[in-house]
Length: 111
Image 1: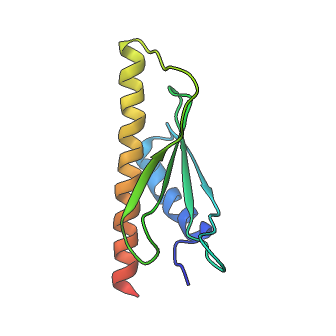
Image 2 (image 1 turned 135 degrees about the vertical axis):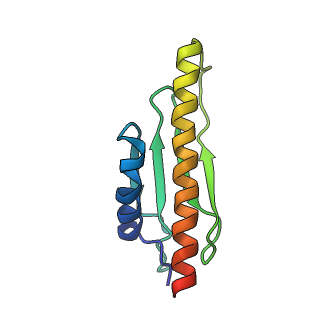
C-alpha cells in the first residue's frame, strides 16, 4: 500500500507552504502508478515559464523524489529580472522536493 497518498501529500505541502511565503502555486494530484496505487504527484506552476514542474517519487517505497519539466512549444525569453525570478521559483521547487524527500524518509523510518 503506497503511503504517499494525495491526502498525505496535501498535509505535507500545507506544512511546507509557509516556508515559501505563498509565492509559488502548488497543486497535489492523485497519481495512479498501477492497480490500487496512489503515489501522489505534485505540480509547481511557474509564473515566469510556460511549463509546469512535476515532482514525484522515484519509486514506491523509496524516499527519493525527482523533478520533471514539461516540454515547451516556444522559446522562453526573459530579461535579467525575469531570469532572477524564475531562478527563485526553481529554488522553491527544489526546496519542496528536498522537503518531500525528508518527510518520506521520516515516514519510512517510523513505519
